[in-house]
Amino acid sequence: MKKYLVTIISLFGCLSILVAQSYDENFTKDRLRLDLYHFGTDSTENYSLKRFVRETPYSGPKNNLLPEQLHASYILQVRRRDNDNLLFAMPFETMFEEWQDTKEAPNRKRIFEETVFIPYPKIGVHIEIIYQAHLGNFKKIWESYFDPEVSETEIPQQKTDFSLIYGKENPQKAVDIAIIAEGYTEAEMDKFTNDANRMTNHFLNTAPFSAHKEKFNFYAVKSVSTESGTDLPGENIWKETAANSRFHTFGSERYLTTLSYHQSMDLLNGIPHDQIIILVNTDKYGGGGVFNHFSVVSSDHYLSEIVLTHEFGHAFGGLADEYYSSSTAYVEHPDLNFELIEPNITNLVNFDKKWKHMLSDTTPIPTPDTKEYDEVVGVFEGARYLSKGIYRPVRNCRMKSNDTDFCPVCQDILVEMINYYSESESD
Ligand SMILES: [Zn+2]
Image (cartoon, rainbow, N blue to C red; front, side, top):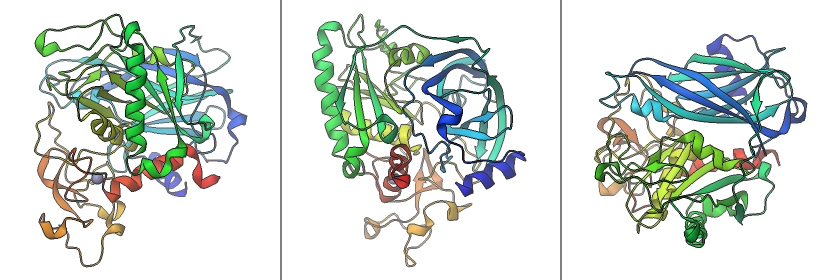
């Protein structure tokens, strides 16, 4: 908590003081949903508000409203309007930023749908979105306000049938995962329940989640699609589905996402969620994961369960891909003069802030990518789509390939996130 305060206040020059305030003083049991538009070009960006929505319930932690880990390009902040006290923060990543690295971005403006959720305020608040260009470099890019007395707020009537398929914890003390049925017709709802249970069982038997099973709740969201399957734009196949998912995102066939995010979020009113999995009814290989946005995965490929855990590493842990050989639709060109944001990669500019404490004194930096170092936590060159200049913690990890587990560094970060949502440290 202290580290966070110093970082934010010194870099923003803010006068605000973080005072330990009880959740109940500032927030109700509901959640405030902000539907946003994120738009721009490869070098410009801005936000606009579409609408405020009052939904139920707020399922995030009540005591930990300010995460220590802010490893994302974007940070949502909520402050009291009367005294500027910081009440809530949430790091997140965006499809817009990925699109900025595509070939299309220099030549046209595009708009992307995003939604963020905060506890529903009892008092007037400032809502800000901060951009972190590189580790520790913050810039405010959007600011608005919400006043429960005067701000126009919709209350949705749409309710999707859902059931708790695993867990029993109070949502405030658990990681709540909502699995949305996508591309399942009414007649396929039993298949969805079976698929959701199969994915959940595999997830809970994967380290580090397996050691923290009691801290998870899984909800099956039985959203009905008119048609079965998903869009395959590369084959000119289009389906009418609940979340409007698609392969071929940004030109990459296996990149399975939805760009209809607001429509997808309409399915979740009344359902607790800290993380959203969109389970797509297809046997085609693919997936996508964006930090505190979504995990998307196909249901019936033989690797689907493993792909889900990889995508969840992005969506829940904010982890970077550790691979560098596969092609992606967009090629990021990070400024290697500054330390990278994601916690499981480094360019050795500020390695002290990464996993240096997990290296033994005898491990060379960089570490040779040879068999001798198979089981060693080190600094191996090649990660996040670049074979040079970016380093990963182990030779192989679930964030690098489908044939191994999460590495110790990624596991530590995931456990930290589990503890944040389940408030384990304050129990
Ligand atoms: Zn890893």
